[in-house]
Image (cartoon, rainbow, N blue to C red; front, side, top):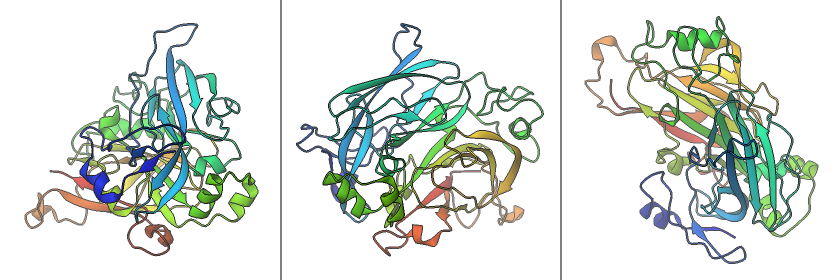
Length: 392
């Protein structure tokens, strides 16, 4: 079992690199102390020496945890971790290159049997009994944003914490005029809308720079919801069905990368930051059961990729639209480009800012108003975050 620190303690002991807090492990049936760790732990270095036709080996573990919510309430959930590291909800972000044969090993430290699957990348691993290990080899045949989950009793274990993001993005990906884009040329061929958009960055009407590969100009946002009644029933060992779960799921907490409200706004792994003209890619997934309609202030964004409502990766869109609000159904995965342009409501004569000083913070919030609350009405302590323009 894993237990989170209280809010005051966990804010005081944040680790310097990725906003994690201290963790003290004491065994499966004992207690461990941690906080909600960042969703953007990268595992580029989790690469084994190639053997037996495998280009990369990634080792994950599954744990039972107690998750502390924005109001201090603790709820039972399941969580992924990298081998010998603290568990997080969502699980760590995994980056792999297109075309690699990747071996996934999963050790089940949970009290219940679990499975593992990358949606849209192959079959599931099969049920892993408590204390046992499973293994599956998968090939990243296309680029995009993928969600990995425990598919057992879909969507039960996914909503109860067993979900994370895999980014398949090769440095060789480029537009037809030689600029970087988040997809392989085979997935967004020359002349496509996505090829055209990323090829126009750093040209009029886009100021500044071309998009850059890697975590520096990306943010991963994973939405989820918590109904503490079902968390309690899972902790008690009840064997309920997926249909019962879906028919009576009543979320009272709405999270972004495991955080809500104040915690999300003050977590650097949730908050996109940058300067004017340095575009950033948002890789977004909805692991929960509630529909969301995120809305962003200050800039419009460009919808560039979507799973199109299917359990699979984001795929480049044939019609790129400039929007300020978008829809994320349950299980959806999508990619959006935040251009970091001068906010259009600021007159040119007042730019750079003369009254309000940098940094300029603009909100992202969901237009499904109940999602702005936590615990049945605490506002705005739900699915809300900032993005920040640091300078012109």
